[in-house]
Image (cartoon, rainbow, N blue to C red; front, side):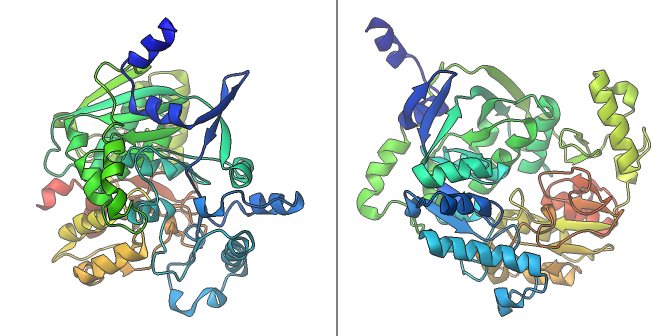
Length: 475
């Protein structure tokens, strides 16, 4: 009894509070059965539904699921509907999602729905994610919505099936890491630069097995759009999830949205949410800190997100690697990216620019890029795919679409688009692409395509100069 009392009095992290509330049962081997508050599916894990059919099962709590068309949704000619999709494989994936939603009574946000968009953008816009929840989806970047003080993570198709059938999941309790970001963002530095700096410091596997909480003055000063960018790339360090403690910025964002608590329950929700933040003295398995005054606009030079450097840097030499394993990564990256050690990053020419993805296609991202593009013109092919239909509407109401079009960008509809290319949006073979997406793996944006990750403003700067460019030099 004494030990239980001491445990109850011990300062707790936000993760610990959320985890404890959701544990249903525990079993040998360290796994816990946890309750899932909300689950999202896109076109990919159709075989989870197939498995339910084979076992004659129903979805246990259909209204706790949402089916959203995003990975295969085309970004052009959407007005004609699904039947007009030219690629039969892509059309079948969209139709299959719609059929599964109908068959199992799952709410659907289809390709032509006014709320359509990338899952992790839509979940926030509709307040489908709220502080204290555990949310899952068949996509590793579900961690984006951990920005709302939720535990949000991606799962595989077999796990999706288990969640659909039981609204629960066997899951091993992760370790915890806190990343404290001190100071305020310097001129020209965006949230994407901060998270690229974190990934570069922690490394490809430095967060493996951990849930990361982002804290500190710089995080507290960020908007929800910026916090989602930060949490989005937690997975690129091997982490299971990223989180930010909810605060007044969180509450103001959620209030009045479609699935937010209604007025009669709002104060009750606030009382619960305000008890979630990490308490002073709470234990974390790892602690890391960054000073924003040392962060510059960032770009990746290689084919891993950890290959991130300030734009003022040079391409590294394999001899600079910290280990033999890293040396091998450097050598492979240099060969694939066709770069020479020692060359200035600002001397790297690009062939194409993509602004979009769940990392950087929210309204503030598009506004930041448009600010750089005013009065300028892209010298390479460039496109924008807003993060949701609502983001697109808002951007058009603000005149951002005109700025992009006048600068020579294609203005498209919302989908995952060229981030992963499931819908057919690819760069041409061998091209070098400046991209706002979260990953720069080999062939991800097309066969032989060499991807450099950066912020929306930096991508806009690359579009108008034709090379990796320090956005601070464009005013």
